[in-house]
Length: 202
Image (cartoon, rainbow, N blue to C red; front, side, top):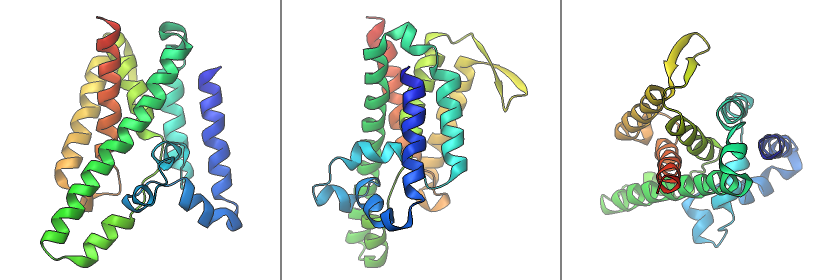
């Protein structure tokens, strides 16, 4: 029941974003930023991973969670799967914060105050990091299992995982200006998924 519960929780939080009087409260408590952490709202390191602004973002993450995660609670055990998901969320948020802090410090050194302020307040949210941990774990546990990329092209899970990593690594190297995707968070979650499989095999 863990995967349906996670999907339901993400959908419920998405619904709260649609309640106009709650928008500022949601932005304060369900979005991660350098500003939120420096003001002691450490819960946003986890709560942001249940937040989605756009329905397409929510739908794609929940589809990936279902496709790759529905068998994992049985394979890993409920407690281990919960640790994987929530650990992926926290690792993803931490990776994104490290990148944002690095970019913010660089902007301050170069006296780009407008950019530094934007980096300080820019919010991050979404379950992608946690879902990437689940996807990576699933792919590494059964790397020869076949999935349909874009529901059309058959591809071994191991190759699919490598493609995900390459896409996010390339996106991160392009810098945050190239897109609004938090590639560092995706990579942080994927790293946790790989570590989870490695620890399981010790």
